[in-house]
Structures are given as structure tokens and as C-alpha cells.
Length: 190
Image (tube, rainbow, N blue to C red):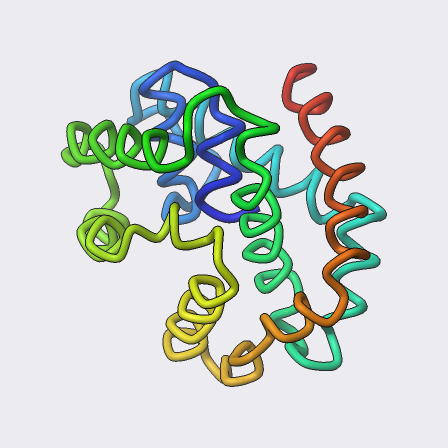
């Protein structure tokens, strides 16, 4: 799961949402310098990542895209899953995607002071480009992959990977349904 998926799975507690959002920029196990809610959000993010990487449907999807994306197949899958969540958003969340995205941007901006520097610098770009809503289109996923490919060492293999999603869309969609159900159960149990 990428940004949209992590925010979706965060629940309603603002600090858990912020912690989950910023977790990729937080290193180490000692989280004691963060407020308790932020710590819970970081731990939730890490649990989601572990469950995602271990899920059989995610592994199948990664193998399908590996020929195109190489070592970045897992990163690409995270974006594919955000796309699959976004296109059927109304089935997963009562709030329209555009409203949810705007609410998340406001919440993250209001807690800007708690974010690590790297995340603080990324947030305005994310908001300006409305990344969360843009994940609902293949073009939005393509732009996200292109941006990632420029920032990642030897990341050029991610460019154009959205074509693999388009070519195998029904397979990915079916696998995602199983994956998301299982992941929600994992999150509720943690």
C-alpha cells in the first residue's frame, strides 16, 4: 500500500493518521521521542508493510510486474494497490475520495510540525498535485511512477509500469479484493 492505502487503514485518530503517513521517514525502533498516537501510527504502518509484503496475492502481483520493474516490483505494486483502492473507493469508504483526500491534506498540514523534514518537504508537492485523488487514473499512477523513478537509484525500470496494470487489470483487481479483505482483518486485530 502507498499513501492512500495507509491513510485509508489509519482509522480516525489524527495522530495515528499522521504517524502512519510519516512512518517511511522514521528510522529505528526507539519511537519514544514521538507522542503516543504518532508511535501507534508508525507501528501500524510497519505492520501494514509486513503484512502486505507477505501476502500471497501481493507476491503473485509482484512477480507479474517484476519483468518490467525489476527490484522495484514491490514499490510498483504499492502504487497499483492505491489505484485499485481509488477506482472502487465508494465500495470501501463512505466519504467520496475527493473529500477524503482534502480532509487528509488539511489534517497533515495542521500537524506539519510533527513531520520529519523529508516528509514536510514532500507534503506541499503532494497537495499541489493532489496525489491521493490522482491515483484513481492510470495517468496518475504513471506520473507517480515517473516521479519515483527519478528519485530512486536506478529507478528507470518503474517508468511505464502502469501498462502492466492495464494489461492484467482483471487479475490485479481480483487479487486486490482478497488482499484488502485480509489486510483489513490484520489491521483490526492489531
